[in-house]
Image (cartoon, rainbow, N blue to C red; front, side, top):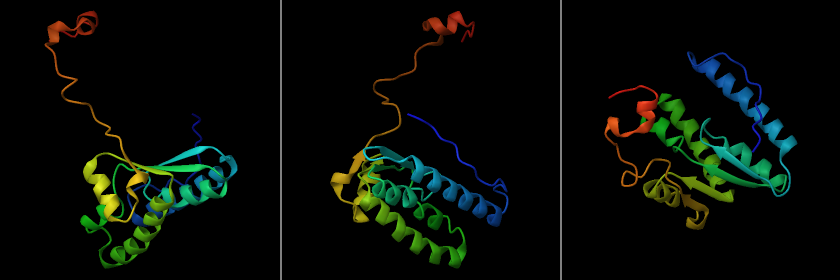
Length: 162
């Protein structure tokens, strides 16, 4: 796997306008880099941070003959709506964003989600079940359990005591 960093402005998260410009410059830089790098047969993974990344990754990957996989850690814009971010103007914009996002989820080769409830949420949005894959990203509490501090060789070796 190769990691490619892209340029974005750095106005910061303090003000909405600066954050918006930062996101816009990131998306433009990322789209350009992806267009130049994506090749037929590649698999390109779009995470959900920053939000809506799949909206640019999926069409570019398809145009370049690559497969797009969305790896969802949350569901945006629904999270922002539940927090009432942006008021009435936000709600109008979220409708447009939701349509774009849903299109990118339907067109992706696969959508990886954290659990069954999230899979049900995507299915309710009209995403085909065969394009949804559940991969939990937390530990299995039945397989991994705490042990007494004195029982671990590493703690003794590092002198961590109890």
